[in-house]
Image 1 (cartoon, rainbow, N blue to C red):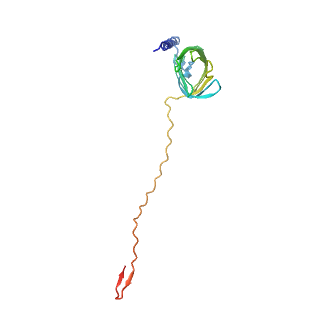
Image 2 (tube, rainbow, N blue to C red; image 1 turned 45 degrees about the horizontal axis):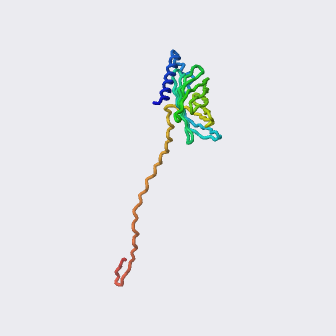
Length: 214
């Protein structure tokens, strides 16, 4: 384990401990009203990134989130990829009222650093100071969707945007359409064996009165 990974885990453990102390005694009903309650679960959907020359490229994105501390502590992973661009963000964030703080790490580039922001209702905005993958971000989370936009520092790419749909756990797959029954075919009639044509026989009367057949 590298020194940066060890520091990352240590900071996250301390954040969880602090959140548990500050939120002790709150009722279970508050878990539904936590600032990050809508971020919990799995999401998937399309996105795009806008390059510095204005070209728009499609992305395939997915996100997972877990909450603790009555919805005030968020552990989130967001990954998008295409043939030209990809990123894998892992963040641990604690909300203290409307203010948020935590750590942000981009796995494919090995970049990590602090993240801070502000959350109000379903809107979460802030900035990451991860060296090599810093920038501003905006999230809008709801019961069915998670929408995010990221503006990397330096403008490469100029913007990343995705609209993800919540995946329902254990959702049943649509049934396969039943095939129509094959209609029964009537049995084939057996052909009667062909009889060789009967030879026609001719009668001939001889001079002595006998009848010959041939």
